[in-house]
Each structure stands twice: as structure tokens, then as C-alpha cells.
Image (cartoon, rainbow, N blue to C red; front, side, top):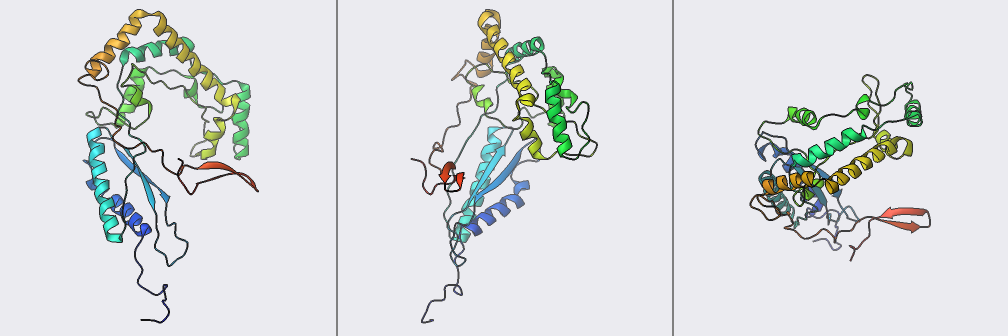
Length: 311
């Protein structure tokens, strides 16, 4: 061999980057074989960390990829998880790495409660849809002007100030779903629906009317959600609906009983009943990761990912 090791010309071991790319590409290429082509389901990913090597001749020591699955049923989610596990195991074997799987969250599908939904719908009709005044419209027109658009007399979309019956809204959402599919998309509130009667309602957040063929950049929605003139009508209206619904439940024993009876029926006896779905907490809580934190530096306030996990 050479009297002085030439690490840059020696055979290099594959590393975490190689494993990550094989995992990423294999899972993309084989996604059509993951689940049946029916119902609305999706798997998306984000590469959180790649490389972590301090020189080009060092194999990457750490790479992380995060997957988000939205499935109509728990069984489909379990099948997709097993598929991804196999890909990760084989990618690690081929690259001389080890792999770990960590869960951040699992949420159950939602449990309907029509009695509660009707109660909240009554409150929404009593409160009415939110209204945006001229101060809010001036802010909206200012955004349009800054984007080089001609400011509109009515810059907000009409749907923001309209109520829609829950049954009609449900029918619109189900146009794109298979008749056999009960659940769609994902959220965190659904977990709470298995512990008490619950209804979900939407109050419109501000959205701008767009000229034909135009699409607003992403920052517009964030800006509209951060200015009191544009976001307060949504927050105030939602607060009124929540308060009125809560008062109705407190003061109306019949309404309270109806929501509880439906909850008991749908769960087969309430929490722990024959049709109740327990929390999907079969994993360690994700409290040991290196969460980003804000720090003070000579350059001012910034954020950083610490070298050690939080204890």
C-alpha cells in the first residue's frame, strides 16, 4: 500500500446520504404498489437532515426523512408503514447504515356527532357570518397595489361572508371521494372526538379575489392572518359561535343529552366501549429530539438547532 494513506482516492463507504436517497427514490418509485388505487390517500415526505459530514471524503453520518401519511383507515396506514419500514431496512443494509423509526404523532379518524353539529349550526345562524369593514378592505387593496394589481372595490371573495348548510358542505366535499370512503385528510382535533361529543366548524379567514389566471403568492395569506383589521372578524365571530354553543349546552338539558346519547351509541358505550377507538400511543413520546430554539447572538436574535437534545 501507499506509505501515506490517500483517503480521497481510497474506496469510500456509502453513508447516510446514500441510504436516504435510496429510501426516498424507492418509496417514490414503488408508491403505486403501496396501497390499492381507490379512496383518497396520500404519502408525502420532507428531508430534514442530510449529510452532517465535515469533509467530502467522510461518509455522511446522519440523514433524516419525515413521512406524513393521510389514510381513510387505520389499516391502510399500518400497511403503508410496513411498506416504508421494509424500504428503510433494505436501504440501510445496502449502504452499511443502521436505521431508526420515530413517531411524532398518530391521530385517529374523527367520530361524527350530528346532534352537536346541528347545535353548533344553530349558533352559527344566530351569530351570522363575519363581516369585513372598509378598514379591512383598505388593507386588502394595499396588498393588491403592492403586487402591481389594480385594487378592487370588493377585494375579498364573496364566500367569506356567506353561511353554508353542513349537509350541503359535506356533499361538496364528497364529490371527489369514493362512495365507500368515510374519512378524508387529517387533523389533530379528531383525536378529541373519541373522548367527548364534538363538532368542527369553519369560520372564513380572509382571502382575496384574484384576477382571471392570477395566483397570489403564499405570503398574502400569512399577511392577512396577521393584521387585526383582516383577521379579527374571523376570530370574533368564531368566539361568539363557541360561546353561544357552550351556553346552549349548559342551559339545555335535552340538547346535552342528545349529544351524549349519540356519543354513547357511536362508541358502543362511551370511552372504552365496544366501538371506541383507543389512542394510538404505541410509541415513545417525541420529546428527545433537537427542537429548534431561539438564541441571542452578537448579531441579534436568531434560531438554531442545538447539538444536544433537550433533557
